[in-house]
Amino acid sequence: MLTVKALLLLLLILCALAVSFTRDLLSAAVIFSAYSLIMATVWQQLKAPDIALAEAAIGAGITSLLFIATIARTRRYEE
Image (cartoon, rainbow, N blue to C red):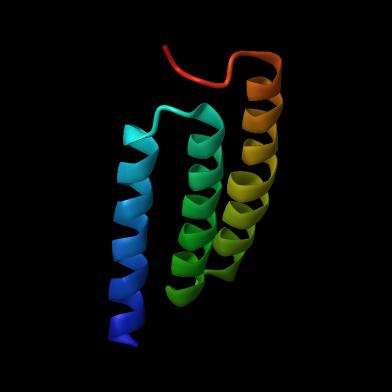
Protein backbone atom coordinates (compact mmCIF):
# COMPACT_ATOMS: atom_id res chain seq x y z
CA MET A 1 0.00 0.00 0.00
CA LEU A 2 2.89 2.34 0.73
CA THR A 3 4.31 1.80 -2.75
CA VAL A 4 0.98 2.77 -4.33
CA LYS A 5 0.90 6.00 -2.33
CA ALA A 6 4.52 6.75 -3.23
CA LEU A 7 3.79 6.10 -6.90
CA LEU A 8 0.76 8.41 -6.81
CA LEU A 9 2.83 11.12 -5.14
CA LEU A 10 5.54 10.75 -7.79
CA LEU A 11 2.93 10.99 -10.56
CA LEU A 12 1.48 14.14 -8.97
CA ILE A 13 4.90 15.77 -8.90
CA LEU A 14 5.60 14.77 -12.50
CA CYS A 15 2.25 16.13 -13.69
CA ALA A 16 2.79 19.41 -11.84
CA LEU A 17 6.24 19.82 -13.40
CA ALA A 18 4.98 18.86 -16.85
CA VAL A 19 2.17 21.43 -16.70
CA SER A 20 4.56 24.18 -15.68
CA PHE A 21 7.12 23.44 -18.41
CA THR A 22 4.91 22.68 -21.42
CA ARG A 23 4.40 25.39 -24.03
CA ASP A 24 1.34 23.85 -25.69
CA LEU A 25 -1.77 25.00 -23.83
CA LEU A 26 -3.92 22.05 -24.92
CA SER A 27 -1.29 19.62 -23.64
CA ALA A 28 -1.16 21.54 -20.37
CA ALA A 29 -4.95 21.24 -20.01
CA VAL A 30 -4.82 17.48 -20.62
CA ILE A 31 -1.96 17.03 -18.14
CA PHE A 32 -3.89 19.11 -15.59
CA SER A 33 -6.86 16.80 -16.10
CA ALA A 34 -4.62 13.81 -15.41
CA TYR A 35 -3.35 15.59 -12.30
CA SER A 36 -6.92 16.00 -11.07
CA LEU A 37 -7.71 12.34 -11.67
CA ILE A 38 -4.61 11.27 -9.77
CA MET A 39 -5.53 13.66 -6.97
CA ALA A 40 -9.01 12.11 -6.83
CA THR A 41 -7.34 8.71 -6.43
CA VAL A 42 -5.19 10.10 -3.62
CA TRP A 43 -8.30 11.38 -1.83
CA GLN A 44 -9.88 7.95 -2.23
CA GLN A 45 -6.77 6.33 -0.73
CA LEU A 46 -7.06 8.74 2.21
CA LYS A 47 -10.61 7.46 2.75
CA ALA A 48 -12.33 10.71 1.76
CA PRO A 49 -14.72 9.56 -0.98
CA ASP A 50 -16.78 12.76 -0.94
CA ILE A 51 -13.74 14.90 -1.69
CA ALA A 52 -12.55 12.37 -4.28
CA LEU A 53 -15.86 12.55 -6.10
CA ALA A 54 -15.84 16.35 -6.04
CA GLU A 55 -12.25 16.44 -7.32
CA ALA A 56 -13.08 14.06 -10.15
CA ALA A 57 -16.23 15.92 -11.17
CA ILE A 58 -15.01 19.49 -10.79
CA GLY A 59 -11.25 19.20 -11.24
CA ALA A 60 -11.06 16.67 -14.05
CA GLY A 61 -14.46 17.26 -15.58
CA ILE A 62 -15.76 20.79 -15.54
CA THR A 63 -12.45 22.64 -15.23
CA SER A 64 -10.83 20.66 -18.05
CA LEU A 65 -13.85 21.26 -20.26
CA LEU A 66 -13.69 25.00 -19.59
CA PHE A 67 -9.94 25.09 -20.29
CA ILE A 68 -10.36 23.27 -23.60
CA ALA A 69 -13.27 25.50 -24.64
CA THR A 70 -11.19 28.58 -23.84
CA ILE A 71 -8.18 27.27 -25.76
CA ALA A 72 -10.43 26.57 -28.76
CA ARG A 73 -11.39 30.26 -28.83
CA THR A 74 -7.80 31.54 -28.45
CA ARG A 75 -4.36 30.60 -29.71
CA ARG A 76 -3.14 27.15 -28.75
CA TYR A 77 0.54 27.90 -28.23
CA GLU A 78 1.99 30.29 -25.70
CA GLU A 79 4.22 33.01 -27.13
